[in-house]
Image 1 (cartoon, rainbow, N blue to C red):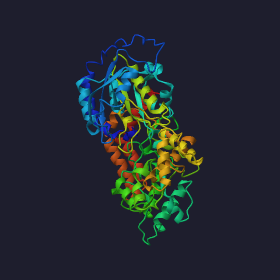
Image 2 (cartoon, rainbow, N blue to C red):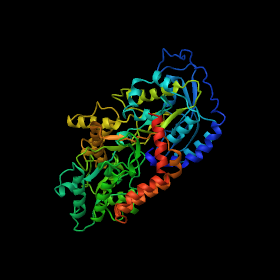
Image 3 (cartoon, one colour):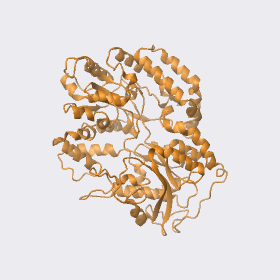
Image 4 (cartoon, rainbow, N blue to C red):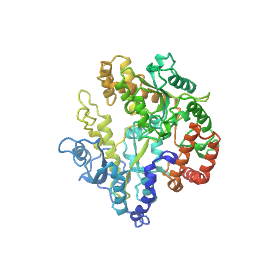
Length: 570
């Protein structure tokens, strides 16, 4: 969830979901089911001999619900019900997984609502923050504190703290662990913004690499004015901006977002931050927004920003990049793959490179980063063996990350030839937040030492192989060089991590009641006002009017709700 804008799809469904959930919570809230005796006699309540991989005998069955999409590919005869993991879980843990239903991801929320309304909850399931909070409020979720403390392996515990503890904190309510956060390698600090620049144009115009925000502005201006493509026409865009301004992708900001630009001015749009008194305030209406807006207004007036940005989604801006017309854009760690790959395909000389965002003044820049987890595994209150959920996660980590596959291929990673990715089939999984950062560091070190990559583990081994092949002439793998190579975008993230110049949203709760009711209206006012100011269609002073209107139309109520939650869950 990202300030008032976080989990917007979930927010939209929250009111209808609340009504649906009443059906399953009304009869259970007053008297939740009592936990049954554990299945294995050795695993008693005090659990002095808790084994993180202890096998159940006889085997137990746990139910869940799942979603799939086009990226799920299976070998013949396999499915989510029966695959490479099925015998491993039975043989090593004595656990059988029963999928009550499996549905396309686009229909998952609707199907889950029906399931919840029926009152027939599975033993565990993956949900978003909104659903998790509703289940917690309805007393339908098992407290996993004891099970996690006793059964989670050191690796599991360490992996879930790679974001500094933000993910674990987000599922801790009144000191109780109410779920397992599904962390991802491109969330957390890896979701922070960076600035992408055509390095070949820098060389052509003899411009230095940027260190500060002023440097970036000078570069973008030169790219718009000094014919970097050499065609004799004034047809290049200095700074690419998409119409949604602050829109986020699944993991980070969308390409050509302005979040990173504002961060350079110490402003935090769509984000909750602490003010000097320790109170949480909404970044989009703080005075720090104005200097950034003033500079953007000037850049638009000077023709550095595309005059048509207000009608272009990021994919249209990507077309400008692909056509060789764009020189600078703020964006995300994976943009070499999603945004600039076609430009490189069309023009092998085009070379985009990511740089850290520098400050607009003498103060250090602090970048806003997404929560390390937006999906959470929750366990139905009263199941016989809640610790089994932790054991399942331990098993995934053991086979996927901790097993030494030297001399053979890890059978759970993606097969690039077929697209089959067995790691995705597992019902409970996480990826440490620093997984890709560490892969970059290992690859960079191996290349520096001129190693052959034979001792690298996954995923460093994959990226080393791609970069090696790129350097041998396979230009289709350029994106890997610019993402994981020595000068890749994950190097920028590693820099952020080292210097600790990032922060997470100060509000980690589900959307408040007023957010659900007013979010769309307030977001529309925000984006319209900021867009008009940038385009010069409204004076800079209109920002103050917007801030006042935001407060009156629900912002003050939201701020109170946010602070009430924050103070309650410190």
